[in-house]
Image (cartoon, rainbow, N blue to C red; front, side):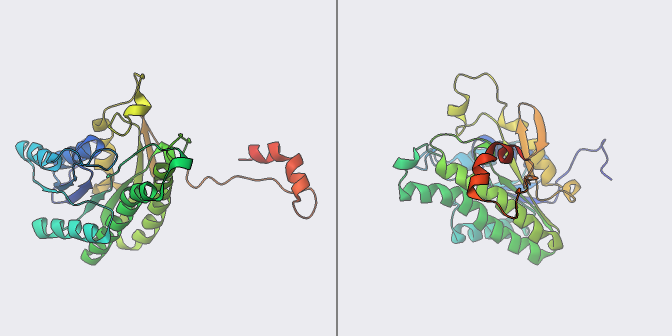
Length: 287
């Protein structure tokens, strides 16, 4: 049983944090390092929309970690491809000899109405969010299962893909909804190997959420989300897998996925289109 009087320790563990140069990723990298993990901080420094941005953000976080007495190295690998994912895992193994934790956090965002969303932008956003989560998860899963020590994978989804439709977010929301499904499958396949996989749906003030919080006074700092990531990266979280955790306004809970409605029975042998039309309010209320 966990000892509530003893702080969670990640001593000896090695973690990769994608998108670790700013916002939530930076907070997660600092928190993991403070708990004792050695961290590979991954960030290209790209702008929010995927264009060229600020260079050296990953290195800056590494310096913060080292300045506090921790161990970390930087990577500017752009997630979203098999090659990048395999390179990141090799980087961790070459530097520290093992990989125990993967935090998939990298992402880009650009709000464009559905009718104006071109193929290139659609593919780019999905490649970073969903493709990056998939390829990094697959590479880490292979390394963790081969090592035989189990592992922890933490994905990042969003309320935009789970709870509410935001105008102009078709690509982003699609990727985030798919990440929740990928989390559940990874958890099921990881169970025989001692590999857990969970997702977080955080509400915090970052570059990506700036427009959402415009004119509002609520919304916590990214560091308030990171204790959950530290817990999910720890040995104490071994029984916890396949969940999506929501953190918002100081509250922490689990999203009910899958949501299975009770449904309604037809009055005859089978449903007809006419009966569906007559009973649509009853059907919509059946949860």
